[in-house]
Length: 66
Image 1 (cartoon, rainbow, N blue to C red):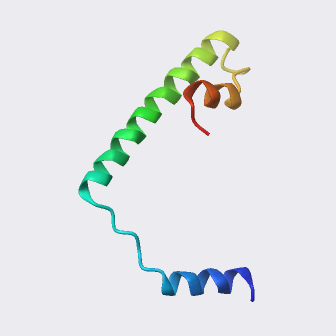
Image 2 (image 1 turned 90 degrees about the vertical axis):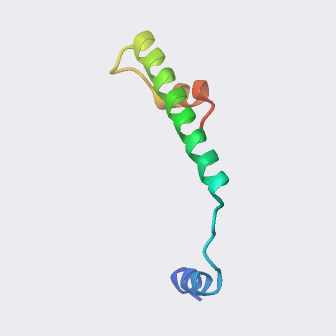
């Protein structure tokens, strides 16, 4: 069976995930916190190495993101 056919079959038999309101609020809080950490790490990396030399890997490591 092709990968696409398998994905289509999985989509037909798996019900969509329904998140509770508390879960949605938690996801929103996490995403805004992560964004702030990434922007702070990017600013620090750019200040240290310059905009042209800033790399993504140190930014992700410093922000504890993948």
